[in-house]
Each structure stands twice: as C-alpha cells, then as structure tokens.
Amino acid sequence: MEVFVLEIVLSSKKITLEDLINVTRNGYKVSISQEAYEKIDKARALVDKYVEEGRVSYGITTGFGKFAEVSISKEQTGELQRNIVMSHACSVGEPLPIDVARGIVFLRAVNLAKGYSGARRIVVETLVEMLNKNVTPWIPEKGSVGSSGDLSPLAHMSLVLLGMGKAYYNGELLSGKEAMEKAGIAIIPSLSSKEGLALTNGTQSLTSLGAHTLYDAINLSKHLDIAASMTMEGLHGIIDAYDPRIGEVRGQSGQIRTAKNMRTILAGSKNVTKQGVERVQDSYVLRCIPQIHGATKDTLEYVKQKVEIEINAVTDNPLIFVETDEVISGGNFHGQPMALPFDFLGIAIAEMANVSERRIEKMTNPALSHGLPGFLVQNGGLNSGFMIVQYSAAALVSENKVLAHPASVDSIPTSANQEDHVSMGSIAAIKAKNILENTRKVVGMELISACQAIDLKGAKDKLSPATRVAYDEVRRIVPYVSEDREMYVDIHNAEDIIKTNKIVESVEKETGTLEF
Image 1 (cartoon, helix red, strand yellow):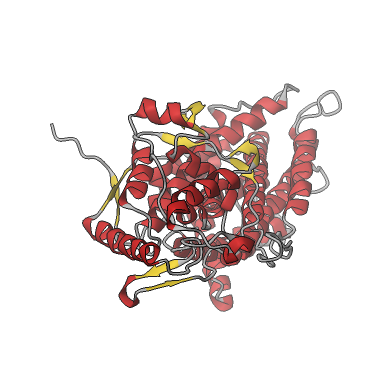
Image 2 (tube, helix red, strand yellow):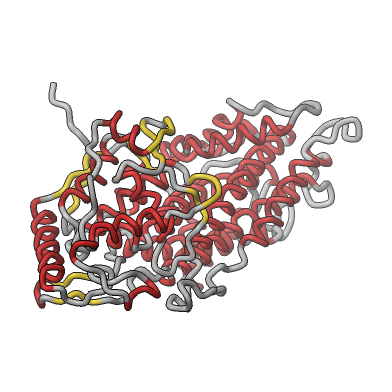
C-alpha cells in the first residue's frame, strides 16, 4: 500500500498560515526544490567572490552593528560567523513552545531558500532536516527588541546547528550536540562567511509567535460566536438584531459574517425570541454581537494578510542581488511592519474576552438575567454557584487591559545607538499570546455558564441543532452544577476542550464552515 507523505516544498510558491501550522503541529515534512537550490548556489557564489576580492561588505568582511567599521580578514570570516552566534544567544525566561520554535526554524529555512542571503546549501538542508527529524531548538522567549530582527532567539536556534545550545529531540530536552546525534543529523563543522549573520538577522521569532497566536485566535473567534449563541439560548435573546439587512446598510464585512454565523448556529432554536415578545430589545452584549465580534474578525483578517506577507519575506541583511552583482545593506530585519499588527491583534483578542465576560455577568446577575436564579444556582446563599467564575473572568479581562497597551509605541536604542529605533515586535507578539491564553479561559467560562443557564431554563430540548451539539460536547466534560463543587476543575476542562477545537468541528458538521 502506497504511503503519501504530506509535504511543504520550499520554492517560489508562497506559503500560507495553514502551511506553517501543518509543519509545526501536524507533522508535514519539508523539502527543497531544485529551483531553490539554484538560487541558493548563485547567491553563495557572489558571497565567495566578495570575500576573495576583499570587497568591503557589511557582515561579510566587517564586524556587526557598531563594529561595522572594523574590517575582517578572509582568514577570520569563519570565526566571525561562529562568534556572532555564540555572543548573540542571550535570551532569558521560559522557553518558547515547541510549535513556535519549530516555526522559527521553518521560517528561517524559507527565508534562506529565497536566494538573497548567501548561506550555503548545507545550512538550509540542516534546518530542514531538523524539522523532519523532530529536533527543535530550546529558545527562551525574552531577549529580542525586534530591531536587527530577533537576534538573540535566532542565535539560540543557530547554536544547535553547530552542536551547541539546547534542543528537544522527540520532546526530550537535551544538549544541542546530543539531540543532533540522536536524530542522526550531522553538525555543521564551521560556518562560512555571511552565514552567522544570515541565520540571526530576521523577524522569524516574533513572526512565528504572532502567527501561531493568530491561528489560535481565528479558531477562538468561532468558539466566541458559538458561546454567544448558547448564551442567547439561555437568555431567550432577540434574534432580530442579526437580520442581514442591518449589516448590509452599514457594510462592515466582519459584522456581516458574524451575523450570518449567529443566524446559522441558532437556526431552528425554539428558545430565542423576536423583538416585542419578551422585551423590546436586548442589551449590547447580545444585540451588538455582530458589531463587536465582527470588528475582531476584521482585525484578524488584516493581521493574517500581514503575517502571510512576512512568512514569505526575506528579512536578513545585507541582501545578495545576483542579477546586478550587488550586496546591499538595508533594514528588512526591522520588526515594525509586524509590531503594529501584533499589537492590534492583542487588542482585538482582548475585546473577545471583554464581551464574553460581560455576558457571563449578564447570566449570573439576577438583576440582568431575565429570570435566572442568582449566580446560576439553586439554593443560593448555601451555594455560591458561578459567583466566582465571573470574578475570575473579571480578573483575566482586567489583566488583558494592561497587556493590550501597545508595545510598538516604545523604543530603546541598542548597539551604541547604531540601532536607534527598535520595534518591540517580539514583545507585541508575546503579549498577544498571553492575552489569547487569558481570553480562551474566559470563553470557556462563558460556555459552561451558558450550559448552566440553558439547564436552569429547561431549554435543552428547544436548542437549535448546532447549539445542541455544542451543549452536548460541553456536558460530556462539565456536568450540571446542582450544588457547589470545585469550579476550577470545570473551568480548566472547558479551556482544554477549546484547545482541541472539538466544539467548532462538531458544530461545523451541522452548519458547514463558520465565517471568521
């Protein structure tokens, strides 16, 4: 029986966000096309020519940063490249997740395979082999300001190619040398001219972190629409607000897509009502779901466009232009084009948590919940029910408000003021990831609160087919709360099921693919 290997080929074809995730999470292999090899070889030949002729070229025959005025002899070029890798590996803090670190390796290989960097074949091949044989560099998350790219995290990645640093092999943390040996990957004996710089100059660390956060935020936005639909079921929300004509006269595409999702998910519900039946209109967190969720969707779409440009970009320095026999020093490593989008991403995700927490409050507060018992529990007083679920959600959204302050409005000079404006793009990406993790917890809390509201209203048998599927998925892991119990267990279980994407997958079997 023929076995098909799922593969991403490095070539002139652009890679997508989905390609990145398939390599980092889904086991896709990576290969190098003949077209890419030819570009790599031509750029390398030009670097060798510059070294042989002793031409002055930044990072090839000179030092780095403020040391750009220091000339380096042909005999010292290999030592120079090794030194940049060792000296620049200065990151601290918790290690990046393995999928993010794999993304850094993959995106660096994509960059080098474009043929503008001047690294030899062996460098790109070793990166690809690390991906295919499950060797993942250990990279601490803090230490980049996103100016000359992600110098420090990329240096940690590069150490492993030389048998230094640390790396995971099949999930086990080892020394870089041991990980490479166990995987059967030959260590590069020494870097040649330009290669240390080609490996460490670029935006691949902040881009990988932000891209993975974006992908998860897209999936979370679907969970948010599902959770909101279940809240609508529990509160007998008014569905008129999702009439397509409302979105058409405004024209905002995210609003239109969200309203369509809400109509699709709630189709067939006997719980939702029409305006004027139980009340004239709902408060904003129900009535304005298309406008609020939709604005986040528009932001995610914008950030996705910027991410898919950057994951295909050449971002090191200097760049090799073979056609004109030139090596030009520029600033493609500067992270500003991604720092602003990743700040925007964090703000958009924080808004997901804000509106979700307000719906939790609406369900738990007897003054707002349209007849539900206080804190979603019978025998209130003896039982506190979901009182502190809302409390915990409030804490998370408050933390998000601090984290959502943009990193990109800051700058601090580095390298003796040679790098006198920096992007803080890596910090923007880290913050967006932290906001996402908080928001996922809040949306999980809304899911379990909505299920509780549905049960208290006796509304389970009146759910739409799609919300019934979502309800059943939640109830498989979180039973009805008849009396007080350890609620953190339910909260953690709800977060875990969101991570698996099981709810979205089950709902989409009923509805078809939901919009984001």
